[in-house]
Length: 177
Length: 408
Ligand SMILES: Cc1cc2nc3c(=O)[nH]c(=O)nc-3n(C[C@H](O)[C@H](O)[C@H](O)COP(=O)(O)O)c2cc1C
Ligand code: SF4
Ligand code: FES
Image (cartoon, rainbow over all chains, first blue to last red; front, side, top):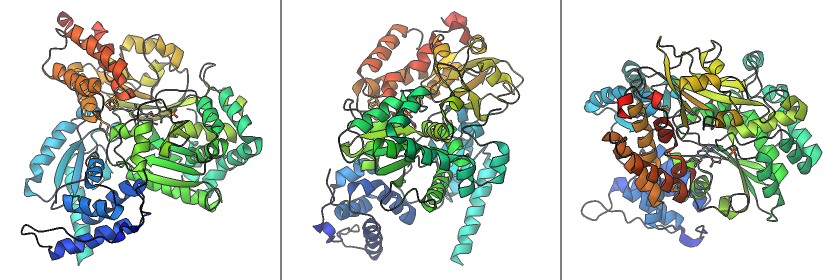
């Protein structure tokens, strides 16, 4: 279980674009990922916190990012991928906007969580946000429940979720200006 | 209304959940000091005297686990608070941690010193960001009180990332260690080889809150409420067709009928329609009929008469419009989705059950289903596979739950 080897810090960026070269963006992302890993003790027990941090800073996971973590932690790629892919809250694709996790589990379906999911999926065709259905969120007393960017919305209605998304968009716009 | 695990309304209004005032007013400071003074043997004797059982679902005697970990000769040991709560109908730990986080954390620190652990972990599900923030605030309060920090016990909060199975204790250890959250074969038990293969005490949030209460008061105070078999109170989570869904603290032994019908608790279905079925204990719990529910009390020996248990404290209510087949299909989907797939009977069995339900062949394949359930119970390595068919079998054994008696 001791993957906390010392000398593996010399990470070489060998992520490639389609033609095999390293793009500027990839080099930049590589630096961010290596930076994240170096903020934690180099031990395997910090893998999950590292994955969370990567998702929080870069938005999603992909094979390049897994490989950089693998190199920096000195744990085989397949092992890191096997762990990361087990968890449903990690996103693997770029997405234009916030993510909505809608509970379509038993107690929420009883309160129309399944139609909320369908309605949101239809509303998301403009691609300003993504929708995923998830199992119980532990908020069955306020069914149907969902998360907008991991923040809970209880007794959710489509109007309220869309309102939250609008607020998020405004906040984001404010940050950038 | 009784306020033990939850603070009374005045205190709840007057003090912030994560504050020094709350710590003192709730008696947790006294509890912490008291437990240090009387020493670990007496601490464990007191836990034994209140017959505390785990509140995470299995009701395993808490004192036995503490004694086992304490008696291990290893110098490195761990204590873990399991706040991974994630199954349909179960949300009481969320409420407890949001409203009074210092109780469970005080219990965790008492546990650490009683068994001789230097490092404590809190594992909280990734979907509970609000809860995680509250836990961090509470840890800051404890650090300021000088209970944790250099040379003392330290507490690490780990965030799950969406995996129900990670709540199973050994899967949770794997998750903290950076491995796939798959359950391990037991034995060895966590008390001998748990986190990082060291002796580990893992307890549910509510179990630890009871520890803090016990030492803030004493054995007699604790036993003054509840039943002889099970002293104290329980947090129950009411959901589904119920007028007042939410988490309620009630003494063990309370009539289920009161819990469901009284205005101060559930307040009835709230739909104007009659109750049709109650799912007791959790997603792998037992369906009981309204009649059974109105005869039963919330206690282990009493519910056992109906083949049911207290479980996590989840009570899910369904009125006459509820489609039982659809609910069972939903539960089956949950287990099929969440099975980690390590054991063949669980991996195949959960999928097969879902298929039978989706294609509505439940009743003509009754014999198959029974064999399947037996194989899953006997040959699965963790509780998920062992109990995944429970609710289904309990529903099938109760003809009166089904609208179409002809189908039987
Ligand atoms: C599939 C599965 C999921 C579980 N999830 C949880 C959970 O979310 N929270 C919890 O406290 N216990 C959960 N448990 C029970 C734990 O394995 C363990 O028994 C418990 O944390 C022990 O604490 P207690 O004795 O205080 O109840 C789960 C068990 C299984 C089989
Ligand atoms: S019983 Fe099911 S969930 Fe549990 S370890 Fe086996 S396959 Fe995984
Ligand atoms: S079933 Fe949706 S929050 Fe529990």
